[in-house]
Length: 366
Image 1 (cartoon, rainbow, N blue to C red):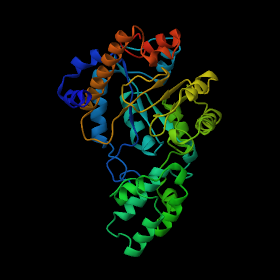
Image 2: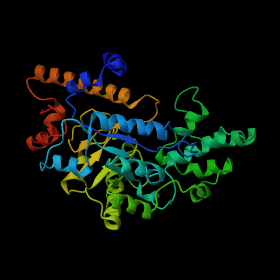
Image 3: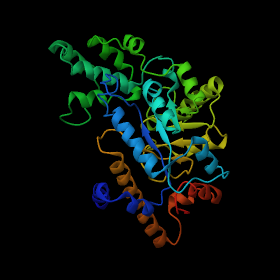
Image 4: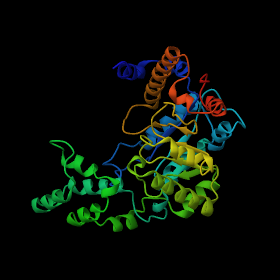
């Protein structure tokens, strides 16, 4: 309850007040797509920024923070440099073509670095992630030409059982998990939705030439797994294989460096062993989650701010995240005082790792 009240109230607190209390230096926002048109494979999943809203976000970030590159972040983690007290790095997930058509031209004119994370199975439009296919099914169900009663009944019979009483049809569709993805082809057939034709006609993802051109323009590219599963749904060896195969493809074909990875959906429930495997080889130099400005137990896994799902201005979104970070920082400090030592998350890291992590956070040397 205190966190909820603090988070809601922070939208109206000047960011200059709450930011120093948070101990946060680096802010990493993430987006998926920017555009002014309805996208059948995305619009049924979340609200994304219009071009005007995105430009307003950029004005906010450049006015309040200094842009840094992915290499700057990795250099700070490796102890080869330091980051400014208030800085930001933009990231974009899922490798949609709007990254090349809309986002990159805006960023290039503004001189703002960014990293684009690609699920490599869909490079050159070899298909779409499960959740984007589900969005297409919802588009058909909710269209002006909905399926007949018989089609709808057949469709519902193929869906997984409802997870809770009174689940809506929409909720049941979106509840289909990665392990159940084989049912999507049958669902699409019932609704007469040609998933492959949609991909061929719309070309929703980046091509190899476009991705290579993003790199030539000075942007960074990272892995977003092979085919976008929720990692906590996979065994540890599959989590590592998804990352390794995707990352090695980007290195061999495009020479990407530094080696960066963004977890599809989120990194909740991912065990410490995976991060140990990531950074021991090292397969990766840095990874990214989606939990806002909360510090992760591994300092090389940096959490990001979701800039979508809401029409709220960037200032309000970021202020709320600073408030959350402040709350957890105060709570962590209280726990340290009661125990006479560091919180459990900090104890997991070596002294060198904790020092490197402090480079990414203003005043946080725990």
